[in-house]
Length: 267
Image 1: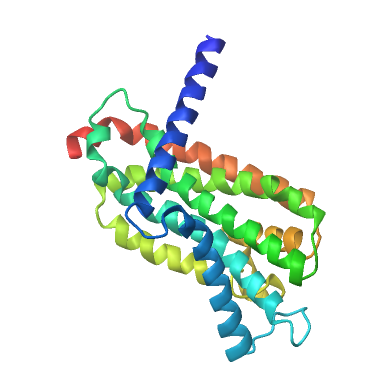
Image 2: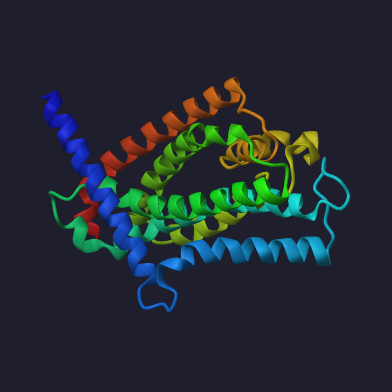
């Protein structure tokens, strides 16, 4: 039983990796620069943010020096990268099975693997952006931070939480077509109530619980601390966030399993 379980799990991982590669290939197929776009896009975005908020608005990130426009751009860019994974994975979940109804009708196809494909593509783009931030910060910022090695510890619970949320929305989206519009609003709400455009220290105490409960706030803060400030993630916040992520994943799996039998009939 155990060898069969591990071999089946390995097969699912291999299938997921293949689907993610195909998804990435389709996105850039026919473009002039092809596979260079995943590297060029975060570089251009970082340059734009640096120019707009640094040279034009001359914005200042709390805790940084008056003229540290690069620090502002890097802090902002990291927050947008974290939110981008949620926007790309959770945002596609409600319409995922409607766009891939042929997979739903195949009884032997593991649909949970299909739910994880947008998450894998989004994670790939995010990692390229994070590597760019680390490189720019090492050359022109505060230098290379060895605490950046904590990246897997930070991303693992975040990915588990997003996968659990995606399972719920993907299952519900089969029955509730309006969920696409609702999730679009929720994604924007998460953007502005998370610590993307501001640090947690700026949040008034009356809104602190809302910002703290936002699923992107802790990973954003932890990434900034590790990559830019040389701070290891706090053990207790990591444990709490990881525990909540596991609960969300379990809930998502249960909802998906309960609603899965009716997918083919509705689609």
